[in-house]
Image (cartoon, rainbow over all chains, first blue to last red; front, side, top):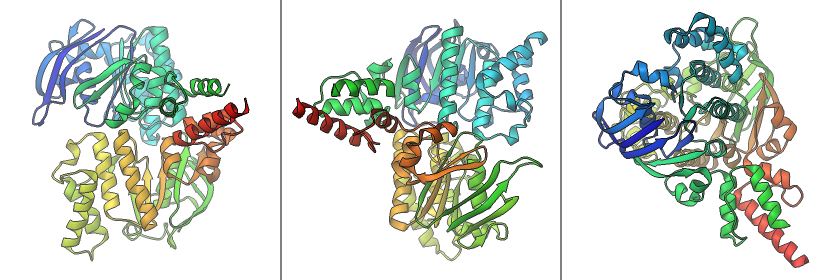
Length: 279
Length: 275
């Protein structure tokens, strides 16, 4: 679905390249979590996948980004955005209408969705995100978290092949954050959507993503299945990437001489591990 | 220091975002306000700062009724960090942004002292001072906004989601700075935060809100261990706290990785000795 080869990008006027020699291959139906410290290049990578780099953000672009057989440099943003639905980090910059329903309709009408299909898509997206009651509310009356949900619903209504989300739960409470990730999982498993999420909440990424990519200083620091990446928790903390507390607990117990044990990614696994140790 | 008496507020006629809430915060407390999106947390902190006036009830800060005092007067006591840093940043460089608060709030401060204070904070936050705030990333703009609040050293700091958009290292750094001000200078901290690990590590008291009402007011540990309350407020306790509750007897109050590791090791030894 997405193939990136030797991508290096330096913003015009930027001192150092934001991305250096990035290569990755995302299969259709993948659920990828991207994490890394500030300045690691996460948002630039998302912009490159969505085509904003180099179409909106100018700079020196080396290598290639192919999304659904489209070279993002050679194709127009209009075509790329039909495949990649992006939720930006700063939702304020994404929302342009003053009422929730209008915001939802804006994308659907611009994409030329048949009139008869619009209502079904709109109600489906609002229901999936759990904000049916906000449909007629003004954007100005919504909290930051509610606006974030509106931005996510607007993109889901467009049914892209790839969902690309840059810190989609930044302003959401823990319950809503889990709900968003559960929704992404459902879209991924039931509808086969490829999901790529940039997120600082490693607990959520660890539970929901299939693979993690850790970026640092514009390069891929490590990548692989979630558990494999979390085995390097100590090392990751050194570059500013936190790990779930239950993963740190498994490593801490191993260091304390309690035996060899696989890293945990949620509380259920941690409970099983501890009960096993105490048996 | 901060007192809310039967305070209600609605954004439009007939609406009610905050309903009849009362609490008192003493000098030097570190309080977290918790709740789901739309619970009324941001409205509550804006009421505390006087950015919003209650439709019913009274908000008093340092003896000043916020309905009867000007923003400039309250700004001498209270530093406010907005949820969205772009609503706060107004100058062209980080140095100017950090100096702005001191220039407007502490008018008797000499240029030399302002420059010295700004330099200290820039060094602590790793800014050169020449950065243009709006060319920085969201996380970096959040740090600029927070640094400008900290520069003024207010008696009360109200922080609306201070860690949003920050990575682990940045989050630990800014929370350590805030915690240090709380401990050494007695700065009162009122923080809205969705990161329960941060709340557990730094705050001592938690106010839990839902549907505009105050559901609970207690120590952070007691609030996180109240399963029914957490459910009602759509919140989740930190992982280690949840684990300790599931493990039950012998694991009470093991809320950190260190505490839990020690408890498990000691329990393993007891069980080995008993065999």
